[in-house]
Image (cartoon, rainbow, N blue to C red; front, side):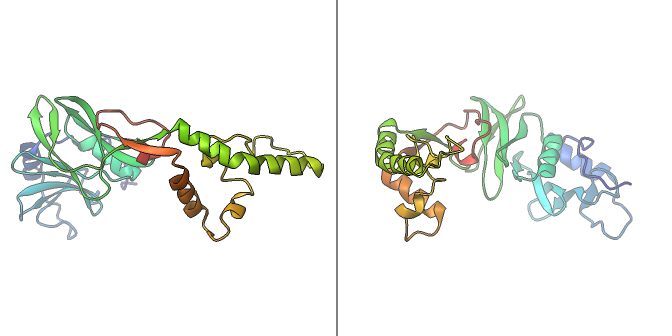
Length: 249
């Protein structure tokens, strides 16, 4: 079977000149599906992996299915679209020039760039990231990227959460004991939670939010009220933390 999503045999295209040479040296397949400005990257049967020329801006695009993932411009800039799908990451990993790569963080694709200041991690929810070559496989970001944030627990505010929830949790434990129903999961209802995340799965939250049917809405309102969790911006040169939500990378 000739159709495949394997990307490890795709060429690594370093710059605009290499993209132009690849396009010019590859013959246009004779089948009708291939357009005048399209050339294969992995054989004539792999139409879903191709290089195409855009006459409007004289740029060359590396396309996976219908999405241009890498674009090479005449001024030397390279635009990378960090698509979150696994095949897209493999395509980018195989074709990006040296000094640029991709990594997965909590189902989000981040572009890893070697810069003059060291290694950096960038992400963008919509659009592409544009880089300028600085020589010796070093790159500089020239387009806006999403601000990375990290969560922080305020200990003083966390104490307020514990103080507010302790009477209700003590009431639950006492009721269960008087009714002769010892908890089969002692950790299911934490007695002194440090955050409302540890409190949200108990049967108490409907009593505290009778008029809020959505648990997520209630939790967000509780966080806003207690302020136990705060966010602060981090540098793009800090590596992402594994196993965490991308919002708190």
